[in-house]
Length: 275
Ligand code: PDD
Image (cartoon, rainbow, N blue to C red):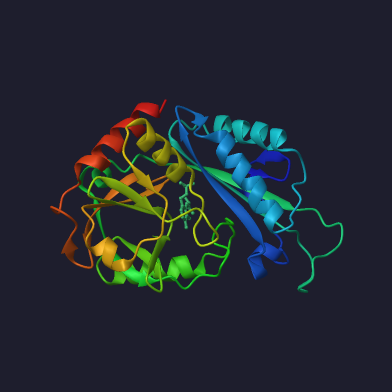
């Protein structure tokens, strides 16, 4: 069962027009939620970000977020989902291809959920990454459908034998293909500030809050590729990947080459928050 407009309907009854602007312009936004124990995790933060993304690209939701929340509850129940992911997409509308916004056209809402198990092996043992130039636009804070650079860079990382890419804009480390990046140096946690060059990750915000509670000093400041290469620990944060250690960067071990003590403390604190 899927969300289409204002209803939960069988997958085969969902129809997307080839004239949907999301389809030919990427003119839309999306959000990904985790479901733990049948409930949306960090629901308020995800809805807030969805509303912000919509407003930044001037898309009006066709109904209040309360209704969307109700529909997502129905979607989860209709699919009997316990642990999984929910994907929601809102495109500007379906209309003949022309760059200006059509007047008074209704946004198109679709959504689905899928089984998803926590990536226990990666959480325990970490992943490998390579540094690649961030080729995206300057509004990475909006969760838009335009993910071609992310897709190309992720694929390039995998073609090079790594699990993911860590992006840098010039000298500055930004984020990863679908997660934020954090590093630890001399006991201090560093991460790129929440400006227009990264997505303001919900897992990032939760991690920074947990770091505060654990009295781990945090610097939301720019740091360079050289800083990252000299890091004691590196990890990625995202809804699905939670806090995933990076144990190799460009083929070189990160710190001791195994997940370090700070990520372990943060992971434990994160898991303690899950239902
Ligand atoms: N990705 N940075 C980018 C570029 C992302 O696409 C994501 C999320 C994040 C982490 O955000 P959060 O902690 O709120 O999940 C950072 C989602 C999961 C995706 O596109 O699949």
